[in-house]
Amino acid sequence: MSEYIDQIETGASVGLVEKRLFTFAGDEPLVLESGRSLGPVTLAYETCGTLNADKSNAILVCHALTGDSHVAGFYAEDDPKPGWWDIMVGPGKPIDTDKFFVICSNVIGGCMGSTGPQSPDPAAGKPYGASFPVVTIGDMVRCQRRLVESLGIGTLLAVVGGSVGGMQVLEWSVRYPHMVRAAVPLATTTKHSAQAIAFNEVARQAIMADPKWNRGDYYETGRPEHGLAVARMVGHITYLSDESMRHKFDRRLQDRVELSFDFEADFQVESYLRYQGNKFVERFDANSFLYLTKAADYFNLENQYGDGSLVAAFSRAQCRYLVVSFTSDWLYPTYQSKTMVKALKKNGLDVSFCEIEAPWGHDAFLLPNTRLSDLLSGFLNKVCARCGIGGCS
Amino acid sequence: MRFDLQVIASWIEPESRVLDLGCRTGSLLAHLTEEKHIDGTGIEIDEDAAGQAIAKGLSVIHGDIYEEIEDYPDNAFDYVILSQALMQVLDPETILREMLRVGRLGIVSFPNFTHYRNRLQMLFTGRAPMSKELPYEWYNTPNLRVIPIIDFRRFCKHLGVPIVKEVAISTHHHDEQGKVITFLPNLFATFGIFMLGQAR
Image (cartoon, rainbow over all chains, first blue to last red; front, side, top):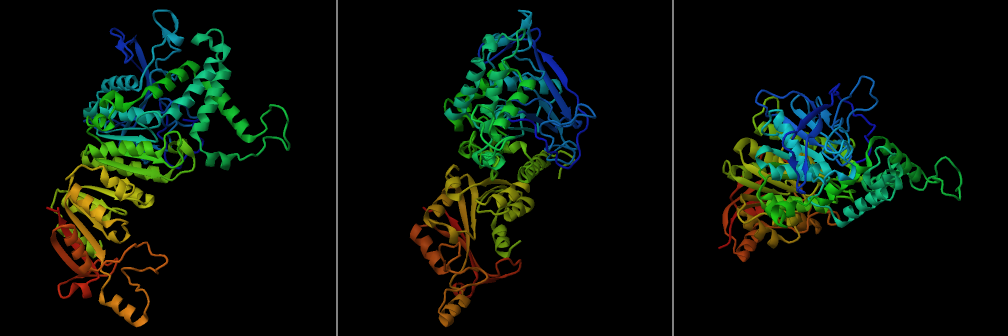
């Protein structure tokens, strides 16, 4: 997903939130899907809203590739920007914190407070770097489960997320069917297409080709900033669409009236990508980018749970689904959501699906969108009314 | 709720499984869910209508009925409803067979083309009839076909599909009031509503 949006929809904010840390697997390391062990493991997380007495109103929000636990609200009074989904999470908003208790955690392998390649390796006394084990979407979800259970929650009312967050939603619904009442996978897929893997590989190669990457061991010598910026530029292109780029930039020139005839950023789109790349470098770790894109590429729900059949994979699921795709998303196009819906229907599961007309590409789920807000609030209200949770109409 | 939908609703057993093809904004499904506690799903091709239905808390798939109905297992539903959409269906035989594959019973409603006012219009003006039920010119109508009640019965016979129940009504397109027509329905009814069973 791209940088946090700047627009703040009118509506109340959850106010001040605090980043918390949950550490586990200190005594007994977590055995990952790769077979390697990791421990202790820390997850950075935030919560907003109030958990009700029977702990039945919890919603887990899963962030996309480069997101974090800061889903809504502000860290300080003078914070210039709220959390990444402030338009969707807050009092009176679709994920209504007056009704729901919202949890969002940073995934393992990430660099926003959870254990990842830049965390100190207790055995080596320095950051893991490239010796960090490869993690999967399944590993991320297993860690989230530990967090959810540590909060005393046995069943989640809903798991909601877009893009790589949507993969976590799907994983949750199939891995822990008894713990999930409703699942909302947005702009996502049950497995990466060759095209999606191809873009990720170009991004990874950009990082690894930077001499400063130094096989992942750069925390003392200086980060591979250029490689990471290029990786981000590639990623960013896939989050937009032909139409949105034409609308935003077309072939307009940046700060000049004629072509430079050198390799300056002549065009606005070049300048924009460079800006996005550089901004990203300030907040993200290059090794984390390698690990997280690999986790997304490895995700394959039908192979993992259905021996190659998506219908068989979803036969484990029990919850209701709301699946949403966007017309201009060329990273995870609508046909992938439809395949998912087909398999859910064949299992007799309760599923709603809507393809939203939106010109802004994959990132549409992060932008203000009345349709998406209405779908989500209607769906969640119904789920909690059916579960007999108070305060829901 | 429209009178024709009220008739359909009266035929649905409580707590049954219902699929509504072309459900629009889901008013029938919402009514059935509220009044009869059915387990309902809708299919609707228009994003705006489907979005409104989901926002009401209904389970609705945004998509084409031909494609979407294929995915359901045999007898997944007790009733499959096709309300005022048969006129716009490209291949009625396929849809009816699919309806009766995935559903135990099918319910079909359509405006009766051979209503006497249509006949008179044609006779006296010599033009293609326009009515409240079929309010389009020949060049802008979404309807691919016009259906007389009498011909629909013949069609069911041709398919070997038993008609379990049938009611002809006289009501305007959006009216909540109407009456059941028993005398010469092919002449006096504005709508025909049929419940169909699975072919033996």
